[in-house]
Every structure is written in C-alpha cells, then in structure tokens.
Image 1 (cartoon, one colour):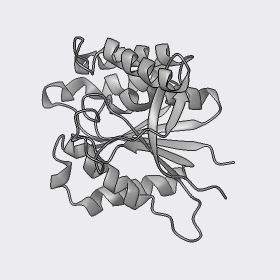
Image 2: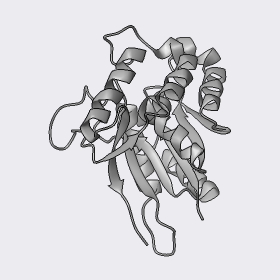
Image 3: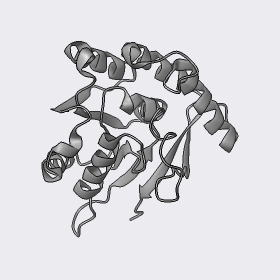
Length: 218
C-alpha cells in the first residue's frame, strides 16, 4: 500500500501553518510524510532557518525535510520548467499517494507559482498511479487574496485536528521568528482561532480546511 505523502510549501513555516495538525494525524495513522520547502525564508532569518525548520517538523514526527533553496519571493523569476522538474524528480523518488500544497488563489506570488508547478508535475498520465492534490490555506495569504470566484479558497475537505492542535502549535514555536502578535492572523492565537472556526463548520473542536483539486478512486 502506498503511504507516502508530500507536503510541498513555498517558505519555512507555510507547511505547518497550512497542515500541521493534519501532518501529525497522518503520521499517527501510519503515513510517511516528507516536507519539501521550495524557497529560502526572509533574508534576515536565512542563516538560522534550516535548523528551525528541522526542529519544527521533527516535533510532528517528520524525519525528512527537503530544502530546494530557491530565491525567496522570486519564484516567478525562476523558469517554471526548472521548478517542475525538481518536483517531478521528488514525485518519482517518493511515489506519493497525496500532495498537500498552496492554494492557487493565495496573495503570495510564490504560492501561486508553486501551485502551478505542483499541478503540472503531478499531472495524471496513463500507467502512473494517481496522486491526490489537496490545497491548504496559509494564514496571512489565503484570506488576503481577492475574494473573487477564481481566487477564493473553497474548503470542501476538513480534517478533525482536535487531538493534534497542540502538536501543531508546539511545532510552530520553532518558527517563532515568523510569528506575529495577535490580532495578526499569523499569531498563535490566530492559528488556534482559525482552527476553531473550521472546527465549528463541521461540528468538532478544531479542524483544518482544504480544497481538493483532484482525487481519483481506482
């Protein structure tokens, strides 16, 4: 049974903001999750971001973090085909059953470029096993996008993270340099509050919401 999952995020901390509780739940249920970070973090934090990234992901039980080290906030300056090829190579190596990545409508341009690269790299082809593509929401990006039909985050898949919300918040403490005081959405209280809202939507205490892009049942 295929049990590999890739979480492909643009910047350090995006992977946990969007799906930290779900990552922990997947690992608790026997999946092997690999985090892929495409771009470097903010220049002033770049020198110590890699150790933070490894510690943060380690809290959730992730054993491998792949750092592509593309330029921060400049993914659109990199030929898209180069990013696609890097992701294709990872897909070939890991054979994931599902990929979590950014939403196509996020305000952050790096997020948009990475979504396009993932969608292309994971395109369904005859003879290849299907890969679920699931978009997470990233606080301080997804909710700040233009609220139009083509950009709106449309949650249609919810994961109950009541048992893993504290693990998510604990892991984010290693990214404390990226967190902000409340009421900024990228604050500890902001992250918890969003999980409460998503939980109320489906009748649980805490949840993470996703938009499913493609799912194939064979």
